[in-house]
View (cartoon, rainbow, N blue to C red):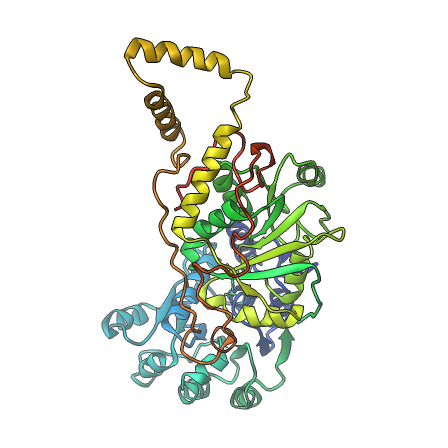
Length: 505
Ligand code: AMP
């Protein structure tokens, strides 16, 4: 991560306020490099893929330079897909929340013309769209670019691959000469280099570092998951992994507290670690982890820098890192003091290109992480329930409790099994999910194929082999429920409060 703060980059105060609200702690490397360049008005060539924070890298400085009182189109972003157009438009709306009147309009093919025309007539300072439909509106005279201040080509190599390059060039040719231009691309094929040479002469180039370092003693795994099922995936990982202590990386300060709250509600001994904590609080949190008072930390990159706690057995990348350097730092939090460690990366379908980048950076392949099948998970939960129950057979209060229940059973003509069942149901109503009654559902795993068929990291290298059953490495192998309740992994519940309810399933 960068040493500079957002406040030091020279962004408009309204934009800065939005960044604060959204909870970004520090600029990602691509942001730290691109923001000053774009604020100074230069053309920019950015070699960056999804997940690096590239959207904010162009949106924040460009928004800082527009005249919000002028309703004409000032920023135009071209994206290869409708999904990305919507995502980028949403990001702009978030970053523009501090402006009094700022309209962001997504425009893409396959949707009705009428609402788009109406919105275009109303006027939007920022338009984000796919090239074909934008060109249509441009040719009909509905999209006016005479006042355009900045044009961004997002995921230019994807636009080329999808056959949009002629449309892109036609749009580029219709923009004023004075217009600032930024081109972001994960790769630089010759056709894109030619566009860059023609339309972005003298562009400043920014690139994220691709650090390479072998990560010894750390077994690396990847679990493809849908964004909305990440929490479910994480809770299952925590259930089955033999964790002593783990650090879970997320992107924002807000997410550290949110996720910590959710995991605490499921019975985990967890604390957030973020830049909002002062030095003393941070030291205390790390000390709690060292001494076993906490077992899980939910951290941002900055807050976890240099963390050295030998009992960390696992690093879970809940959100993908910004670059390989950050990844290497993160996974280096485990495998300390000569011990072995395990790193698990969750990737959503859009982020799968990270896989190859990170494998290259660490010089080692990532194994597919296999979650247990619902039946295996259920069996495990039942065994854990039993082993926790057994942990109370020598409890000091057992004799008194038995006496109390004996009396109740006699008075009500119940046998002990029925009474025990009633007690278990009580526990379940107090803490839903604590009784392993229902078999959990199967977690949907994104398709093994890369988005639009081409041989990406998933396909050819078969790194995205289907998750799910199968005895292969990863997952929960060798993680039999601990016999002694006291020696249970951190991911597991404390004492007899099998407090970790399973609402996420
Ligand atoms: P992108 O590479 O633009 O697709 O961004 C990937 C994700 O990173 C998005 O969910 C952003 O909200 C998030 N993000 C971007 N910049 C930052 C930052 N400086 N700190 C934390 N999260 C960020």
